[in-house]
Length: 176
Image (cartoon, rainbow, N blue to C red; front, side, top):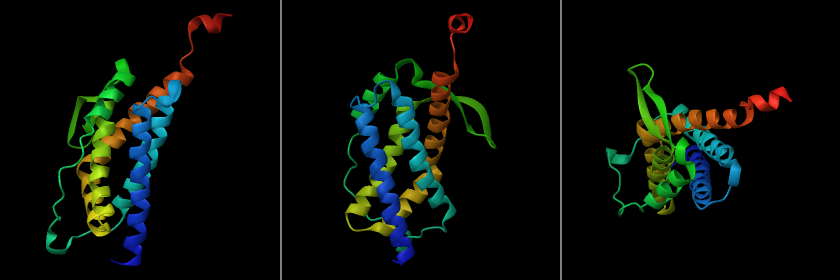
């Protein structure tokens, strides 16, 4: 594996681990009233990593074959905890593909955030097993196929939540 790929794998692994750790901390109750902003930062940072993968040439596996891994860890507990924390703002509307499927689709932030984590964890498992090329391939493939869309949708929803928190002013406050 070239030095360029190796450096990119190290960088993406760092972003992936930071995202998973941050999401787990928020699901565990850290962040208090600032969870929208914390989650927005986590998603934005991992989206930067995804953009780098998207801008890179295609990562091709030898033999076009992904080495098998044991079953990925179950992160449904994180999803459930996030759904409880997000409550009424967990559900939101999104356009899945603005070029092909312009219908408004119901989404859940808790599902989006954990879908991103699940794909990142799968790649981290390759990386930690000493297979950085396979990790890069997985992260790039799943970025285009799954987690890039979920991260983008979650970022738009989280940005809207952060904006509403900061910009929505009660009428009573304006009249005093």
